[in-house]
Length: 162
Image (tube, rainbow, N blue to C red; front, side, top):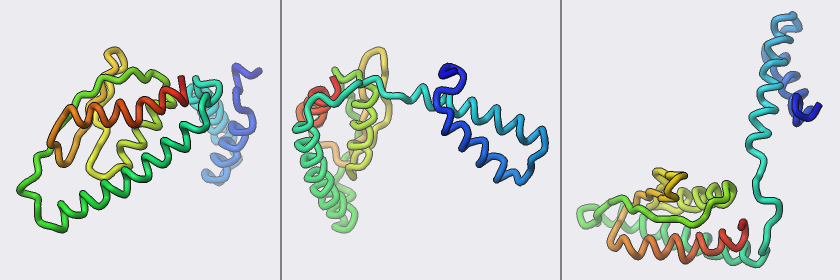
């Protein structure tokens, strides 16, 4: 039964929401809603974490502190660029960063960290090679960015998820 409906309560809620939104209890609406509810449960099953447990809770606190400091620092730096009129002095660019991190949850957290930090954007990740492509608003030194991502974030994410 769990293979057909891995999350029966969620599937039931999806069906109820479908029927409520369609405002019909016709057979066609029920069948289509049931199809969407079953498919929704299957899709949700694919999102289940591959990490069984967090291995180092202290690393979570260190990572959150680093991210908070980096977000504040980046906000100030981007605001200075945008509001200070220094736009002609900046050089945007792409950086390729080889990652050792393979955990889906770790990569998702890293994507959230990078994208939430002003001035940086997660562009692409190649699953086979483990190369992350990052866009940086004010790129001065590529090796500094590689060391920052690997040394600050990836190291702690490896402690947490692998």
